[in-house]
Length: 329
Image (cartoon, rainbow, N blue to C red):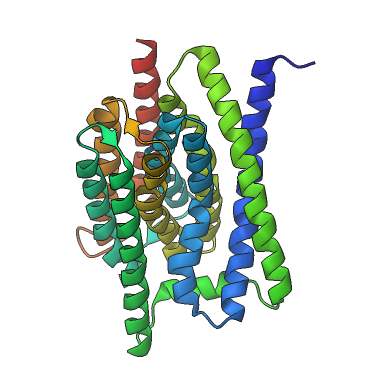
């Protein structure tokens, strides 16, 4: 019989592994299903792919909040955004420099910064309640409507966008509607089951070592739920599909702040440690500003180089070292 800590560790590893697989199956099935129904590739990339890569964060946060681990739930949302920008984009740029071709991504990056600042202001009182959750979800609905509207306008105007072309190349060809539905259901079931095991293992480890749920959410769980973005973005970078690599992160981060962060407020409203506002949120906002400046370009080049990637990865390591140093101290 394995000791409880070993079982919890295995639950974390197994939960993360199945989260990655489940997210991949869900996105594959949902993309093929939408394509079969006549949805344009650009809209699939802007909505379904963004939601699909954020599905692990959403389900993990919902499960954690329902089990009374609101700190883990909030930490997962904020920590995943930091991980996406610093680790995912850093590793992707290190694999191959990322050129920002898509005007849609250049348009969405400032919106992401506004969403970061808005969420920060909403949580400034140190409490995340049901009214806050409702506001975030309404903003998410408005954001999705705006993105779809802009995509439709561009399509009707006959304006080509590289993101749509890259997404079209990634949608499974020849997958029947029945098979696509099968993978959507299997993916969702796998995501739900693995989320439950991951939360169980993470809270158990946190209690064993006497660390807050928030810290585990900001680090271990955040990295685990961001692995789908990491795998998708690095693979896209190596195939020179730069807009997919960056778009995965931008879309996922917007979903995380407006959708994932709303869940603990709706399910388990309450206060959270002030350290989140003093340190973690400013780090997330600072990294978002940095990527925005690099993506827009200082001299018109609009790209993330390998040097930029190394800088982002260094920031990710430094952030985690500071977090754990503060905890030990």
